[in-house]
Image (cartoon, rainbow, N blue to C red; front, side, top):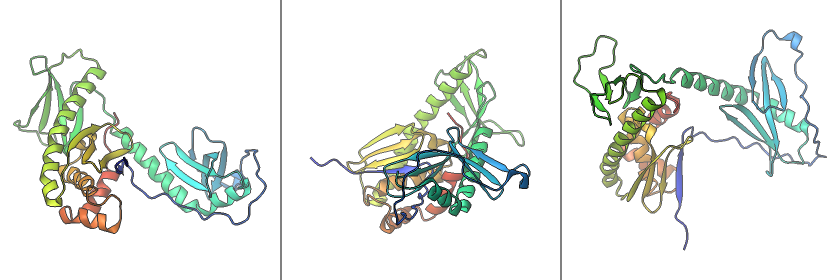
Length: 298
């Protein structure tokens, strides 16, 4: 029996560059040494990006980039920029000199991506939560304050009736925990509450958009994936990352519509995006918010 198709929506859904393969094979060189760069005495305090597993480095203009170089079974040189930095992969027949030239040719793309990755990391760190009484976290685009009070329901009660002071959040989540609760206890209680809200809300939004797209979903599963917002299976199974509840409802609706649209078009062709646009016309704007907004690191 043929296995069903599956489509993924990445957390950072950006196309990877595909460098052109080199035409003439060269003798491989296994020695990893620092590639030549602009003399340091010509550069004052260069900006630096250093991968924790760096084994080569290069000075791209005034930016020092220490990257991890790997030999891989591939047809050309590949570049990947992630949270840790730059990784360059190349087949064994490509010389280190060719790798150096390829890195320099991609200078603008590499530096731009590294700066964006660092900026995102800084925003994520700034969003990190200190789990205690009075901690705050985002929920459906609003800020919620944690209130510890053992007299409340153990599962947590969201209070939306209070009158917020100017500049203060209007929502409070009352947890049935003592003031002596450990940060891990508070975090786990908030996460459990958020996951319950996510399961209920996602099912409602799937039911809302499925008839409009003329599809039928059969099963909803919550995901905690670190790199995916959602997946769609051709058998009607949908997986959605519970952390989507940090975003406003329009962003959630975009992801729901995205996955349901895959039940009609199992790729990212123009026809797929036309399908998404029939129910979420501003999907491009919402897709950008999904990539750019910083949410707490769990």
